Length: 78
Image 1 (tube, rainbow, N blue to C red):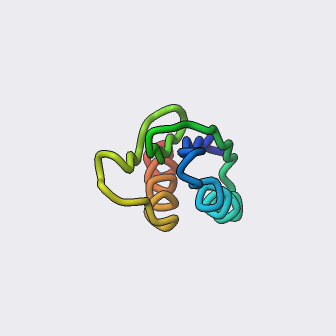
Image 2: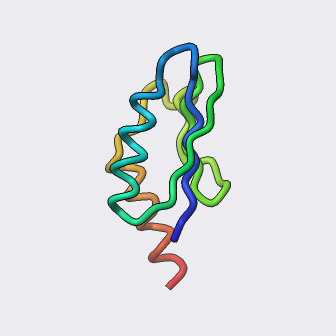
């Protein structure tokens, strides 16, 4: 099982988005933790590796693309 961490901006109100993504990722077997941050952050880590940064991408991630990254990691460990 992969460990996913979502770091979201508390002042921006990204908690609802983070909670929704957590719920969906858990349906795919991921263990997800949420961590509050600031400055507009919305970063997603898988096994402590940054796989998505809202600041770098200039958008929020789609749940499907995070699931795809988890599946890539699963297949690379086979």
